[in-house]
Image: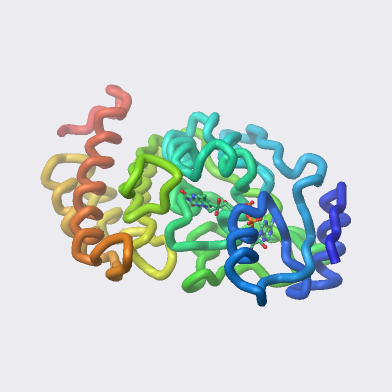
Length: 278
Ligand SMILES: Cc1cc2nc3c(=O)[nH]c(=O)nc-3n(C[C@H](O)[C@H](O)[C@H](O)COP(=O)(O)OP(=O)(O)OC[C@H]3O[C@@H](n4cnc5c(N)ncnc54)[C@H](O)[C@@H]3O)c2cc1C
């Protein structure tokens, strides 16, 4: 079975009817890899690539609302630095033109660059069902385990909402600058009120936040001493593993380096009126 609806409502009806028997297909940049590797991969598809308005991005009350079908190429043009830079490190141009933010969230890889960037800006994820309607959950509640999420098998990810006015910074360490799965990636976001979010990829079973490091910055600001304390804390909070890309100890050390580097970058970007004493 290969369904290719034009309207989101039709797609939701199909998803509600077939549930886990049918696999949503965004850009296919993850699914096709699975199909090429496994003869036992999914066989029935709900192609979302023809849906009207599914890829649109709009501004609303100080936020961006990106449809699930928004591609990395589209996200790369937004003025949310961490997200746009993360998007531009995904694959090559062909992957960025096809790969969607819903697909990144659907795969929920601990290396998902879009997931890390969205975690650092407190995004909300909109999950929709044909009859139950929409539910919106904060991204930190979305990832429930290794490649497991709060998405129910009869729902679709229909949109992502995130603030447009946070200061953000991003860095990805990998063997190449792009077309590259991270060894470690880090995104940090700071709201206009000074709430900070420090997010990592590739250092735990899911993308994760270093909450104790965040608390240090929330309490003591961006002085050199608190940045150093946050970096030390982040290294303790992560739980990396050894694999073919890197050792756990290198990943852990890089979490400290990236925390230090990106917090300093945010400090440098701070509006002078904020007047923090650094
Ligand atoms: C060469 C190459 C390089 C890559 N580099 C990177 C990289 O640097 N960083 C990175 O993060 N990723 C990378 N990827 C992985 C991939 O491009 C991303 O994860 C992308 O976001 C997947 O989006 P998609 O639309 O292609 O997803 P698909 O392959 O279509 O789907 C992925 C999963 O999400 C589910 N899904 C899709 N849409 C929905 C929806 N609306 N609701 C519910 N579930 C849905 C699917 O059922 C599937 O389980 C790379 C892939 C390739 C092939």
